[in-house]
Length: 77
Image (cartoon, rainbow, N blue to C red; front, side, top):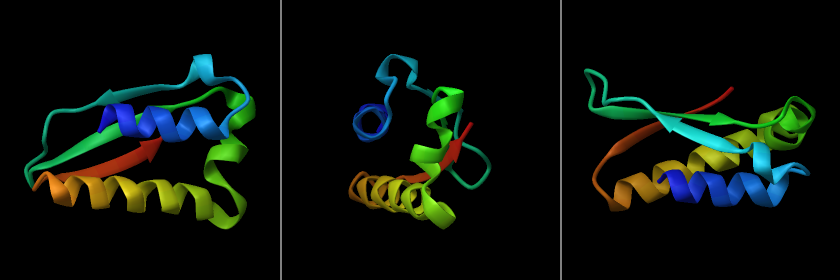
C-alpha cells in the first residue's frame, strides 16, 4: 500500500524526492492510517481543486485495501 501511495504522489508533484508515507499500527477498528507527506509547495497539487485529487487517492487506496481484506485511511500531511 505504501508503494502505491508513493507512486501516485510522485506522479503528481514537482518535487518527488520529498514524498514519503508513514503507516500507523491498526486502530481499534482494524484500519491502518497512512500519512502522506509532500513538500509544502506541492500540497495544492495533491489536494486538487475542491479536494478532488485527494478524494481520488483515497478511493484508489480503499479499493486496493479491499482486495487485501484490510481497511485504510489516508491522511495528507
